[in-house]
Length: 251
Image (cartoon, rainbow, N blue to C red; front, side, top):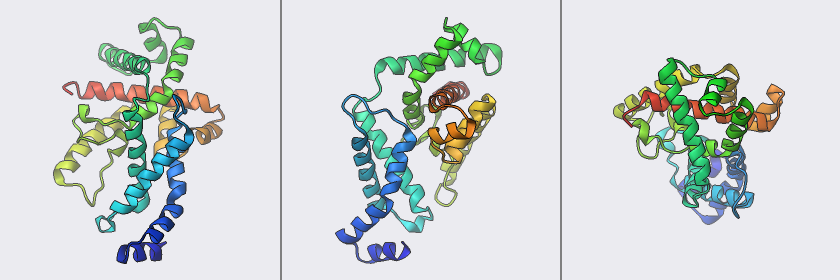
C-alpha cells in the first residue's frame, strides 16, 4: 500500500487512482453501514454507497500525508461528509421527525434546568404526556434521524462551520492554538455530558464511537436486539444534544 501511494504521489494516473479506490472501497461501505440509515424515499443502499465512493475519491485526491493524519482517518470523515451532504440536500429527514426530535431535546433540557440533573426516561415521558412505552417508541422512531443529527454541524454550540459533534477531538498536529482551545472547551462539555448518561447509554456511545462497532455488533455484545441498541443510541444522543444546549444557552 505504501508503494502504491508513493507511486501515485510521484506520478498520478487514472490507473493508480483506480487501484487506490479499489483498495479503500471497503472503507466506504463501512462508513455507510455504521450510519445504519434505512433507505427510503427512492434512496437505495446502492445510492448511499455511490455517494460514499464520491467522498472516497475526493479524499484520495486531497489527501496530504505531510499533515500527519492517517489516510483512513481523513477518508472516514470525507466519506461521511459526502453522504451527509447528499442527505441534507435531499432533505432526507421528514420535518415531522425533526419536530419530534426537537420536542424531546427541549423537554430534556427544561427538566435538567428544573431538576438540576439529567432526568430519567420516566420523567421525560411524564413531562411529554406519554407512557414509558410510548416514549420508547418515539425514541425508536427518531433513531435513524438522530444518527444523522449527531453528525450535523455544531456551530450553535460555538464550533467552527462544518465541525461535527464527532469531530470534537482535535488533531494535535494540525490544529491551531485557537482551534485547540475551542475544541477543548467543546470536548470538555461533551465529556461531562456523557458522564451524566445512564450506564447502558454510556456503554453504547463508547462501543459505537470509541470502539467502532456497528449497532448490530453492539447488540451481540450486550445480548439485545439491534432495534434496542438503536433506541438506546437515540436516547443517548438526544440527551447529549439537550445537555450541550444547556451548556451553550447563547447559541
